[in-house]
Length: 304
Ligand code: PSU
Ligand code: MN
Image (tube, rainbow, N blue to C red):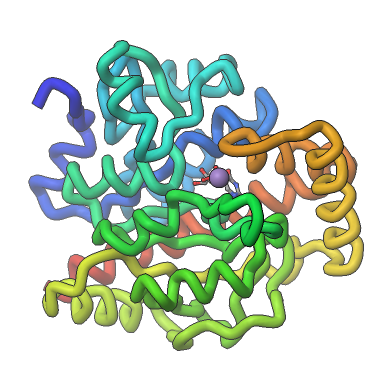
């Protein structure tokens, strides 16, 4: 398929049944400022390697869906930043047909991972049901993708820029298991707690691998969401981050930001308002998820 390309390293790793972890690129182009975005993307790849797996950062480059990017391609996504279109499922046909680049969201990275046969994907936070969705109907395509595509997603929960309660309800409706890694509570990205529970708590990557195998052997479609709380030392003060998020939402409303622009807008605003503290937390939780993703990918191979 000319629209799809797997890097040599990722291809060989898949052939040899090595552990592979998919990584997204919206976080590079739209989730963090340059140069921290490129530094973090490369550090996440290194972290996956150090944990004994092969990273497959995904994006659309010159109209081709790619699993596994070169350093130059990661640099390009970082330097160009917001100039690279944010690409979710619905954006793929246009970008591919026009030969354009695209920074892949959780949804479209899952699509690429699945095409490549990769089962585990580590990210920061997922998209979800936005606050006020009862009137805006802003529900991330990530949730539909989790319902249909069999790739396990490791995230630090969801930011409270979203309505976490409604996001979890939606996942329940769609039949997506939400697994807490060593936690009973669904984490809220910057903090370990959200006030909402997970469906089940598992203690080890091996137990998670067993759950994934059980789900997919039974031909139950779709993903599993693995919630991995930010390490204690890096979490933010809950009351303070809540205030910051609320202020960011007020600004977004005032400026009339809507649709696919809202998540990147809020992320940048929160980072500015928190004086960079949120960026540090963001980086640390992504690294933490990359490590867990690698452990689960290895455990999946051992379960075979
Ligand atoms: N949430 C974050 N950081 C991110 C994103 C979400 O904390 O970088 C990105 C992810 O790529 C996610 C996308 O898939 O935003 C969701 O965008 P939307 O809400 O427009 O679907
Ligand atoms: Mn949206």
